[in-house]
Image 1 (tube, rainbow over the protein chains, first blue to last red):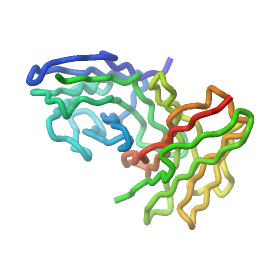
Image 2: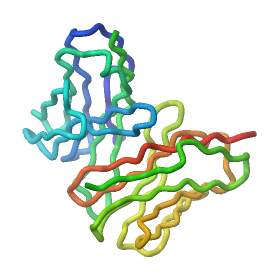
Image 3: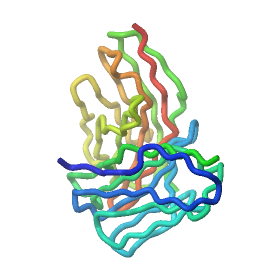
Length: 115
Length: 113
């Protein structure tokens, strides 16, 4: 089954304690992205990757890190989480897009609370 | 930069009735893709319908259809025979080939029994 697997689904942590949210896809997609979802703001892109070892900042990259060492994995790292990073996070993957297979496939979401 | 606007933060519809969600976007490109995603309370993002800009025919998927007006840069979603399971947040999204997705802020749809 084609899927994007994101873990954990829920996470409560304290300010400053480093954490990693994992994301893995089994569709051999080149593109992977991280989004955060906040009420009234929709989905805002944090970082994206167009292929292995290629990453770039999205709209709200401050306080986050990513890496793309393998095509299937794209972890999101919060080195020193702060309460303003409390949010719902989504990982997504897609092909570059063409006449078919243009949509994004999303993970299940991670609800992060930083206290 | 491309932007996607959904001017209705919330909408409601009576069960079995029809509702239309609005979406407008800003682009100078002629070849792109548009999407509607549904996010039910489970939080899962589910693709509802997709439209290629080069196609003049409006996409349909069962009870879901779009009204794609390329010149007006409008992409509305019509849900016919609304069901309780249609209650969700709906996101409109834009994408060009090889580029990132741009999402709108979402419209929360309530379905009244």
